[in-house]
Image 1 (spheres, one colour):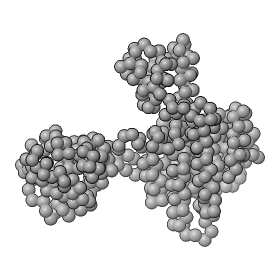
Image 2: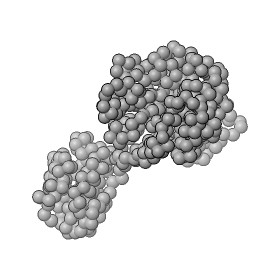
Image 3: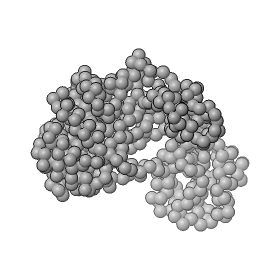
Image 4: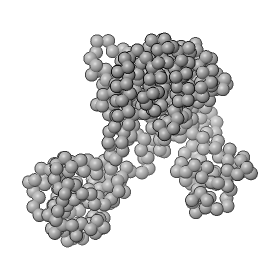
Length: 475
């Protein structure tokens, strides 16, 4: 947790710092037992200060404003779009994930252009909206549409944006460096609050006017020139544009090292040095892989775009623009994003209990696994794919996997025995045989002693469960 104090660095924010500015009346209107408990939750970003009704009263306005300033993240949060599909960019509190949770997952946009046929444009919108992948209990989706003007024709760009607005409610990025073209696009989406791309050294004033007129966030672009990027940012802030996104440039091949260094330096300056002029979301454009494709096959270009996107994800990009809509090339990015944006303080876990596969009866096999999400969904998928009827007991191991759970005493014979009783499995089967994971074999004897069930040590890899059940299960 950080409080931006000065360009010299940042200061740790403690619950007592917040408590001093709260009403300190322990009214419990926030749902917490006292103000100190509420302060602790604020510091952990589990609640908003607006949950404290007394703090919102006129007499506490000064304390409220002080708290807002103290809690302001080093990287400003910028909202793009309106309604339920609006995305929040930035809002980062720390540079490294192990320091604290990352908020606001990187938004992924798919591009369309104003020179595409209507059929191709609509097809890309549909594929963007319909992209969906189930991963350890989460549904992974794409977030935005980037409309690019490749014709440089205001009317064509306006028509393309209008067609996009009519066919999706996903937030938009309008990409046009010519202010006249950009304004035509904004006229077709006057209330959509798109992200406008981009203000440069040549057009910044016209773009700033458009951003203010249409109340939309603005991208600041200065490829591989951080000094110019900071100068433009300072100028735009003074001009009145407050919601900015920084584009330091995305390069592949020889420029890849500069790209990653620039993203890292910007985020380090914001989070570690408290530099307010760089404390804005960062934009990466992995689709540059398509602009330098030469004679490369499309599959190679898609692969290059995918690895560039992955590198930018771990180098602090808050929004990415991609071209490929193939599932295999998007999957690495959305899965990596999900893994990065989970809370490192809380293991990804599922609810413990009894899971039923197929139509098991009193002679069906009983297995157990842990409630670590990745373990559970892997095991569940392998049992489902086998088309076999089975019971699966999910033991509460506080989100630990099998091997680490056994090693750390999160998975014990006592917990397995408690889970057997809690699930009522003894009333559902007439046998007393339990198939345990191969990696839990060391506690097999203890399980037998505590439960009275005969233990069969199953495979270490859940992909071998179907074969194991077919060959070795006998009720």
